[in-house]
Every structure is written in structure tokens, then in C-alpha cells.
Image (cartoon, rainbow, N blue to C red):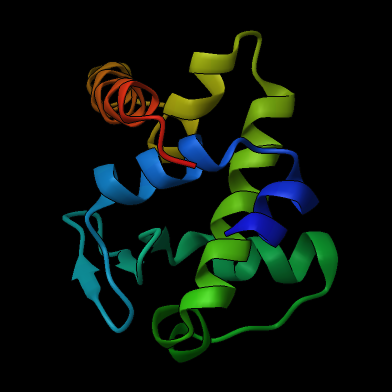
Length: 125
């Protein structure tokens, strides 16, 4: 967590909040209504497999992302860092990690914020 946080310049509390919001775990694969799947602890959507290959030349499969918790965290942080850099506001970037669909986006931001607030109050690092 610490190395990922430093590498992508994302507060560990935010990564922990997203992990808590996503509710994933190593080995978990969840089918979505649109035919994609969410993989592992950070619930990386399978649409990112081709995107990573196209953008950075990384060719990973479902098993690589689903079953390797460290890799899953790195990929999730990479996605989040990209979304944060593209968004007009911090919270927009957080919401875009999950979805750009307004109803899902706003609900997700609220859930991440609630988890983050609890962590900050507990002073968890």
C-alpha cells in the first residue's frame, strides 16, 4: 500500500476507502449487466485490459488482475491517478474511477467519502 501510494501520489486513505467501497478481494470476479466483469480487490473492470495494452503496452489477462492482489492494487491506483489527472475536481476523478454515469458516479463519491471520513477520524494510515 505504501509503495503504491507513493508511486501514484495517492493518499493511502483514499486507496483504502476505494478498497472498502469496492468490497472486492483477491480472486473475486463479478459479472456486470453490460457483459464486463469486475476483478479482484479494486474491482478492475475488464474494459481496462485492452486499454492497458493500447496505452502502455501491458498485456494482462483476467487471471493476472483477479488473482494477484498487489498487481490489482497497482492497476487500480494507475486508473485512479489517470482519472484524477483528467478530472476538473478531485471528487469528479474519484467518481470517474467507478463510472461516468451520473447516478452511479454521485453515489460512488458519497460512499468513498464516507469511508475516507471514517479513516481520517480513526487516524488510520
